[in-house]
Length: 189
Image (cartoon, rainbow, N blue to C red; front, side, top):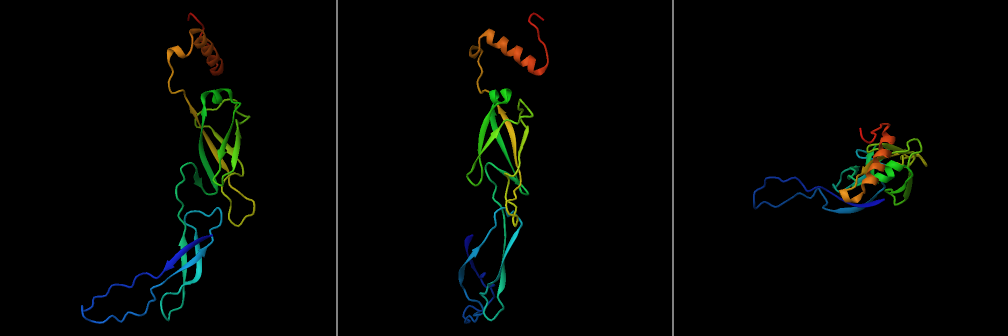
């Protein structure tokens, strides 16, 4: 629930003689505070109607006040319907070894634990992991939520120098990478 001040729009400007008295008493220049209840999970374009709250025009039937929701972009999550998406960065080691656990802080502050998907022992940039029931709440549906789509981005080491690995370590790494890729680059070839 949010408190909002509403008021009458300014009266239209009329051309009058500069010395003529003003007789525009048809509007009360006032504001009032109203409570607007925004249900969890409501989206851009949905509306909230407050019946009879626009009563600033004297001797007129009170009108409805309608709020059209507009969602602000979030720096981490994107939304499509009731589903959320997030890009999660993981290290090259975690991507290749595939036995990682990481966390995501949800919009409501909860920490969601993510494990490497068991169906893929190695993770590639762009790979999708769907976490069922961790998206946005569905309005008017108790305990129903969309899904959370996690897109992984593999972080490569920023600086790799020739001195960071010995020649033997580079050869061992080469053998392991060949094994992963199903290729064979034998020494001396």
